[in-house]
Length: 228
Image 1 (cartoon, rainbow, N blue to C red):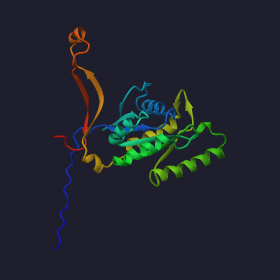
Image 2 (tube, rainbow, N blue to C red):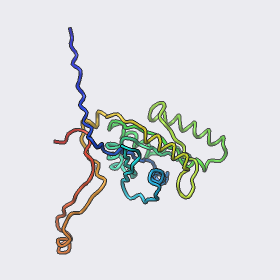
Image 3 (cartoon, one colour):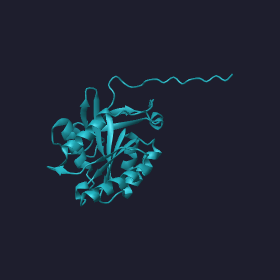
Image 4 (cartoon, helix red, strand yellow):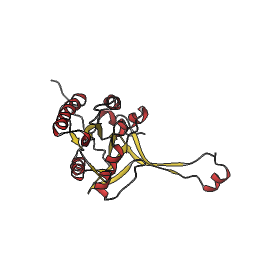
């Protein structure tokens, strides 16, 4: 007889789990910053300037960190390693651009996190027939590039430099209730998401020599496997 030993799964989730990382990825001028500002406005009722990762409370026991991905290979690799959810923005006027294909290839090499598509600039399309045809074409192309049945949201209009409240509400609800599975690639590769950096060097030392060795404190969350 062959005996199969069942693996015992150990729940290593801490009492206070780290925030969910939501990465906003897309080509230049596709609306990444505007989307983050709209989502933060929905959750906090405040207008903010995006100058780095933003963490907001989305539920009783849930927080979300929004990260805007710059359009360079190094940033894409870092984001693909840490993101729990990727909001992949696609300009409806241009379709799929080079930055989107580059990020998808990088994400597949790092475990392929959950990916959702967001179509922007739909208000610039002329006529309802043209908009519906573009939606169908891009939806099937998105399913081909990611996986069949991948979720795709539409952002059709803006007011006061923010996206439509109803469309942002639907997207925010989906993000708030979404559950994520642990990727085997990340379970074997420990990493740390740093969302705050502080210079701890004494001001007197900096005044005497501004090129001195500095003490820097990094604040963030440890994830993945045990680093020790």
